[in-house]
Image (cartoon, rainbow, N blue to C red):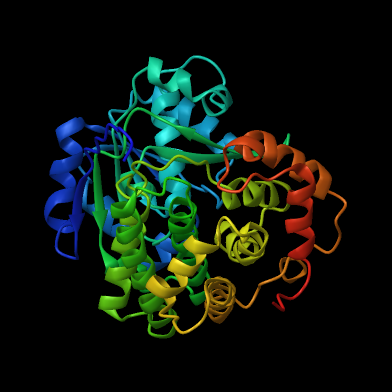
Amino acid sequence: MLDFTFKNTTDVRFGNDHIDAELHDVLSHYGQNVLLVYGGHSIKKSGLYERVLNLISDLNVTELAGIEPNPKIDSIRQGQKLAKDSQVDVILAVGGGSVIDAAKVIGSAAFYDGDPWELVVDSAKRYEIDQLPVVDILTLSATGSEMNFGAVISNPDIPLKKGTGGPNSPAVSFLDPTLTYTVPARQTAAGASDIFSHLCEQYFDNNASNDISRNMIEGLMRTVIYWAPIAVKEPENYDARANLMWVATMALNGIVGLGTINSWTVHPLEHELSAHYDITHGIGLAILTPRWMEFALNTNTKPLFARFARAVWDQYGYDDMELAENSIRRTHDWLKSLNHEMTLPDVGITDDSKFEEMAKAAVVDGKLSTDAYVPVTEKDAIRIYKDSMEEFNK
């Protein structure tokens, strides 16, 4: 096992009895001036927007609406100005991972006089300044942003989609599974694919002695594999929504990633897709993951893929290479059962004109040629993108 330091101070309030009883006191603990950050019309349509405003009607609330999936830097710039002008004490993020990601970076930008894109490009700057506390009400199970330090922000003008880390995870996260009942099946599926990818990125790692993390990840994988299809088919099944919400949080709150040594691969590749084409992140991951697995399977990685087959997919009775290949097929078929869109043309990417540019950026930004579980060159990345243009027939 490798040395590590771990600290996560997010206060999680899980279940459907916390928001009405506790939200006001949680926010007023930090001050009277609240920046309410949210996305589109879904929280208004569901009644959550009005419910929240009624609970905090005596506080000074400034609103920032319109946070998009793959949150854009212009929203961060707007939030920075509002936070400074209104002397905000605390940010309340109501929505999914994109909203929470935006809130985290706005929390830093409130103490920064320059362009907040500089905080995305260079995370070290965020550790030199303060960060407003973020309280969130989660409405989509996917990114795990509700209990981690990361955020991913897009700059369409470049185009570039980049992850940034900060000094603090959310102060308090309200995780009410009933708030995800109205999430459409497509978004539920994309969220589950994102969760599964987070687990794969940490599982396929060259630290062979990190058995405790692998065992935990295998359990979390089995959880999302079992409950995600139920949540898609039965959107108001509380147990399905609750398990999916908590597995999303556990997949990326830092615990199962302790002691890993490799950088992620599929996420940098997908960030280029959604930076250039603004596709749904989870669906992009679903498309790329089996193609990356096919690329990554070799004599050296065969034992871990075979373990993956046995421990996660209950596959036995074959030699290791057959087990490894079966695990990739099972992964693809499960993802396809959730996501109808499983090739790049399915999401509107019909030519390879940008693949060289995307591959170069992904390899550099993700350090894929040096730090990945299986090194990925620009040529390899182009191959993975091109393989994703066709139906998976392995």
